[in-house]
Amino acid sequence: MDNKTMPFLDHLEELRWHLIRSILAIVIAGGAAFLAKDFIFDVLLFGPKKQNFVTYKWLCSAAQALGFDESFCLDELPFRVQSRTVAGQFSAHIWTSITAGFILAFPYVIYQVWKFISPGMLKPERRQARGFIIVSSLLFFTGVLFGYFVITPLSLRFLGTYSVSSEIFNDFDLSSYTALVRASVLSAGFIFELPILVYFLTKIGLITPSLMRKYRKISLVIVLTLSAVITPPDIASQIIVAIPIMILYEVSIFISKSVYKRIQRAQENS
Image (cartoon, rainbow, N blue to C red; front, side, top):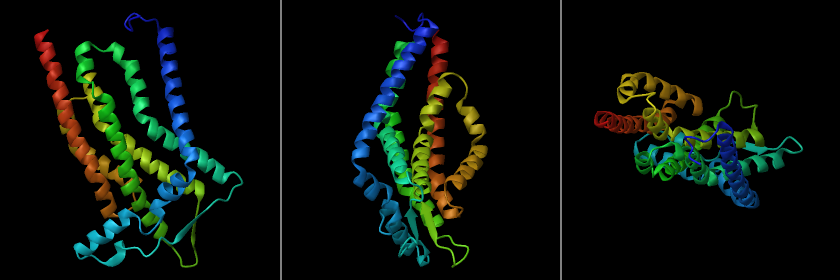
């Protein structure tokens, strides 16, 4: 049945099955992550906790090359991760596996989203947006990597070395540590979906390239504020995070301009 004439309840039924397939894919990928506990925790999750993590090496090398002091070079991260609840480790294992499952299954989840919305689009629109799944997945994975290799180590470097007194030792709870890593990775992944969001908002007429250019300065303030929220409160970290987000914003303006021109041409030819 054509989606244009499909009753509302049938739409809900169609949506339900797309959600079920997506959840099933996340559960299967999460199950694989659950079994790969040693790699997920010892290598990935606790990788940014180690002083020989690649980001810390890069920051140290960059600081030395630029003639800065040795504050960017770490001998150690002076904190420990502990579990203070009976089910703390099991709970962290479950939620980390679910997060990993979602990241791994993201292309399939996006495919299910596409399968649900594409029947309501015209054939030319479907052809133009054929790369939706590939592009959105690449953007998401790029954001995840940015969150893991940039935001997470910068946050841990600041928070793990921050001290108000020599009498206090940082003992981070396992749930707090894993929540920081998950939030950094997922938030960056979704932020990097900005060009996709702008594409669809332009398609439905909610934004235009001129509107985005008009509020570019305000957007810069928002980006800097966002960078201050998701990174430690030091200028270097905020700039490192803000630069790619602003690049994404400029790319989104270009995408909006391209989509807007196509819409105008279609209106002129109709």
